[in-house]
Image (cartoon, rainbow, N blue to C red; front, side, top):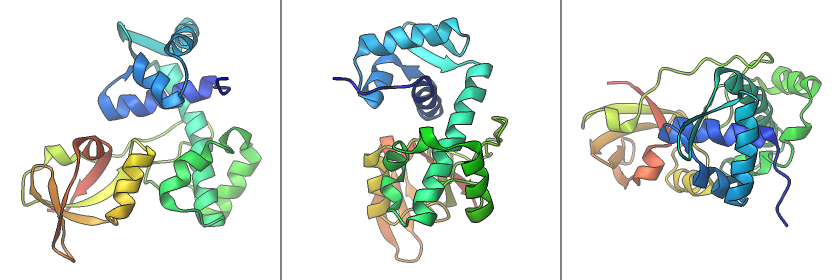
Length: 214
């Protein structure tokens, strides 16, 4: 039996995949939501009809402006759920995305405001900005690892695509928002304090954003 998947779940994964790869494919949407491809297709057709999703080409989708606002309203709940689980319950950083899925739909605006007043709501534990109650969200002007030359020194600002595999890799290598790294060569970074070299798989690199220090 397939699990119940909401409109918000679809909008969230389309938003994440678009930031990660430039668009969301039907296959990737179905895989991430652990549903059948036909089920994903049927739901996306409904979202297209509602003006929330735009089909770029066969099997490739992005959010409309209205869809982005709706996605942001749900991302607000998801990211605040992560804040609550991390700061309130002390859950491990690498499991927050998965665990937040269990409570995000139940976060009311009253709860959201209480979380904000207690723990702050500027960014989620993975560094992503938390949208306001109107669905507005200012995207940071950070950069990809692939855009900087060897010898650069960077600060990790956020993880834009949060799979268990990616978060586990970062945890194993003590890389979190705020961590300082040096760019050794393509696909290889160093941690300045330990001088240890870390080879970053492309699928992990694509999920990271940085601020260039020099």
